[in-house]
Amino acid sequence: LRCWWKNIYLKAQTQSEPYCHTPDFTMKYFSTSTLALLLSITTKSTLAWMTVSHPIHHGTMKEQSKTRLFSSKAKVTIAKYEGLGNDFILVDARDSSEPTLTPEQSANLCDRNFSVGGDGVIFALAPPEGDETYDFSMRIYNSDGSEPEMCGNGIRCLAAFLSDLGEDAKSYRINTLAGPIIPVMNDDGGVTVDMGEPILEGAKVPTTLAANHPDGISVVEQTLECNSKTWLVSAISMGNPHAIIFVNDLLTDIDFESDGPALESSPAFPAKINVEFVQVLSPTHLKMKVWERGAGPTLACGTGTCALVVAAIRAGKIPRPTGEGLEAAVRVTLPGGDLLIEWRESNNKIYMTGPADLSFQGTAVLK
Image (cartoon, rainbow, N blue to C red; front, side, top):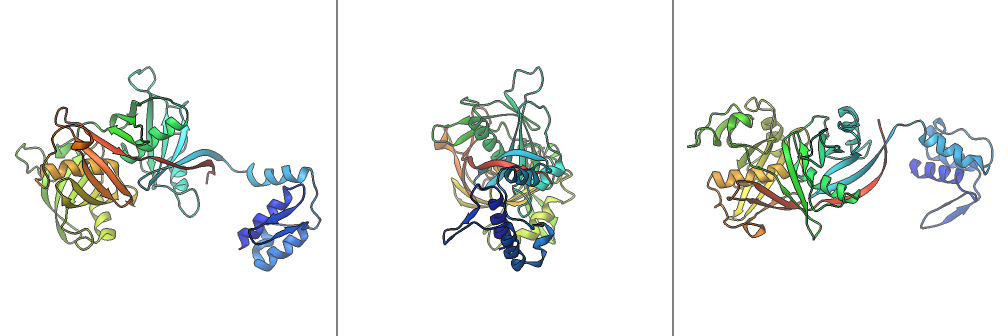
């Protein structure tokens, strides 16, 4: 209520005919002293931010109000995108090779109570200088200020952002800390991303869990004691590390809020890890919940979805689909919706298809 009256007061200062309007009624010709009285009735603390003793004046009051409200704060232009509810703040920094905000500033922007809110801040950057291999670069800070190598849902959002900025291309060659990634814009508005090949060698994930696969290097359903429980963990990297755990029932077999962070920070994963709990629904349909490294519970994780499909096939949970394209894809249901994942035999690459949508754009105050 206090914020509503404050808005009325500021509206009055910026109108040639001072008024405030709500769906229920219209009040005209308030003086600022009258508004101050209403505000003080709402809360005794109101006068801490407003001192008035004269009626509203026209002309310069509008500019004075704007100056008082906005000039003293550092700001950044942003756009908010989401991929299956995994939401990101996008910053256009195509004239820079490095992120234009600090990790701390990015973490503050991600605060859902005191700022914009998001699972991370993504920067659209210039490609490496002198390297014609790439069109753009991508960097991302998580909501805790840490920096992951890449983000699958995030790169779909980046592709949509670039398209909305006028970068009219069917696909983009993106430089990431995980290597080159190529998102392709589909006619239906979705985005298909060439995620590259999975990294199966346990030491490169990285994990200290012993290799137990016949290839001598992979970790497939290896035993791990954590949080007073015994887990069977498969470790795979998509440029960032993932621990995949298959359960019979996502609702009853895990204590998500306790097991997730315990596994994320287990000593078995020197760089910490993203944790995916997976339930097999059919040979072509999986369901998962994710605890993301540096972000906690999110509604979707693109790289994790790719990793768990590979893990399911290698652990014998589902058969590897034959053919190419969406007809050879496995459907993965996440809390925010579905992604389609194809692990193509012909080139060993993984292709992820899903949505990326603009929520809003504007200016945010840096804190």
